Length: 490
Length: 110
Image 1 (cartoon, chains in turn yellow, blue):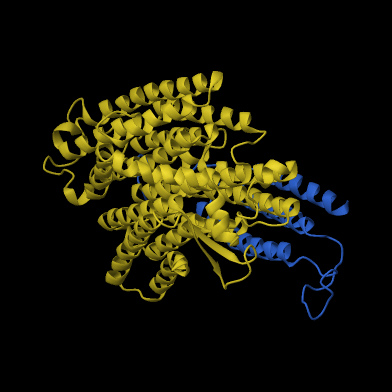
Image 2 (cartoon, helix red, strand yellow):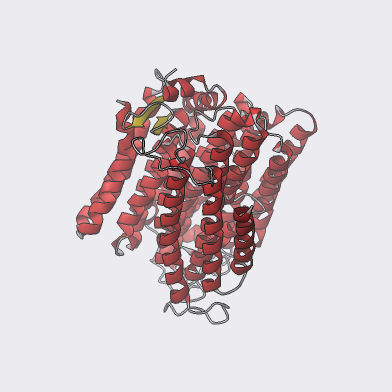
């Protein structure tokens, strides 16, 4: 049963290779939808399976425990697998609408990206995490420069340099962990950083590299410059699964190695607060819809990490819930603004205006998406923000007040900045672009984004059904015993 | 000590080159930094001369640790692939100063 975990990597990898050889358009489209959907279904089955077995582990080649390559799945990674599959399938649907999937090798590259992400989510070994993150990054280096505005070439250069540098620091950290602890198996490293200051420092190098990839201030600059330069479909793919893999790795490594007690925690706290504030206030300065959304992504990364900094059962649950909510909402908003760009040819705030009369459906879904980002009902954002505030309050003392104040100030700033976007795009004088009056967005353009925003609304109604899964995922981060039992077999 | 000094020289040179404006220099800089990291990985095993890590050839107590070597091998392969891609990007973009926009035949206002 647990050997099937390798299928999450093997199937996308083989289909990516297959699509390089078979140059048939219909086959490419079918695989591009079926493989991520199958991965999502697999993730959903895993979430259900973890109700009875908390952790599933498989050692490839049945080596001794702690020696071989391990694939481990618990509720957190299963939830992420489910979400990554759904997001990839919907982004693929959008790319088919814009015709970008017809570009040579794009379907293969997207499936390769899925391979790397699935592998990174399932691996139980730091060095394999590095390898899978590279498998995820290499296709994205190509994807970011394939489509988008003219800036994509310059942005692509910067994206490659920043990510290669971060990967280099990451592999250095892995080497230092190996030198200090003698192993890179996460289960064998459990609690190691609490006992040994050397491991603690080496782990900090690893986490630093992951924070760069997640886009934490002051290493966030690459994200709002690179992502809006590529096309909307690719940006939605990256925002949903790329930066969030960095965050997943931070959650996993920090909880396993440090158990929530790192000596450098005050530094992380300061960075997280700065990330939330910089992200939400910088949204004001952007002149394009997707530019504003990119800074909201930075703010979201900070808010997700608040859950990790506080490290209680509630705060971790809230952080994970916020991560899932943010992936869904952000993906939906980017795909909706992509639909506008596809029809009107621009995403600039000064060119678009008065779209409320032309595109009522887009306006409705975007309004819901903005409400979700800020944390207002009827969207998953309300529960995300509310539980996050509850979690932050558990930090106690001045830290709690600092975190609460940060989240509230950031929410108000985001609300105002997003109102600015809304007013420019949807209200004001009628559109002055050179397009016919009967040209508007159709359901064919906006169904992927609308689906994601609908999921966000559904999470608002069904939060009580979804919450136990996040609670279970957070429990696995605090109580490592089942994880160690499954991997080490003792 | 020599290996640590080498790492120091490689990282400082690499950092200087990455901060240059030209893409090709940045690629060279990343090459130097990744080489320094390869040396760090090797140091995390034992850098002194040991026997081959094959059970029939050498006494296990005297054999080298094969894992850091495997790490380095993987890191080298990945860096090589990315370096080629970056050099391709350096050619496609042409202009390092961004004074002239790259000619992609697209509207620069979108």
